[in-house]
Image (tube, rainbow, N blue to C red; front, side, top):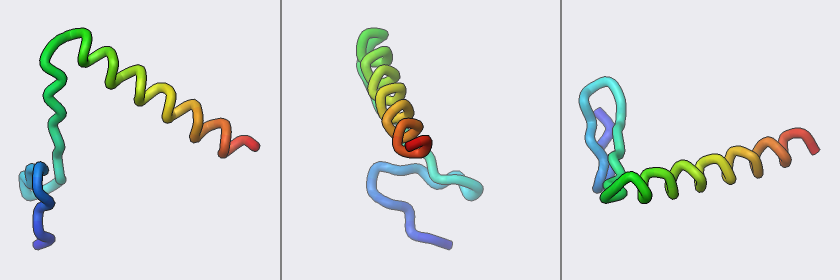
Length: 47
């Protein structure tokens, strides 16, 4: 079995990482970052 990196959980089938964003506003902020990253990757892929 592969060693589980620090801060990750290994349930035997997948690695999982939980980010505690403290509240709703924090959750929205991380989602906004995900959207920006996805748009940047899409732009690179279609260039």
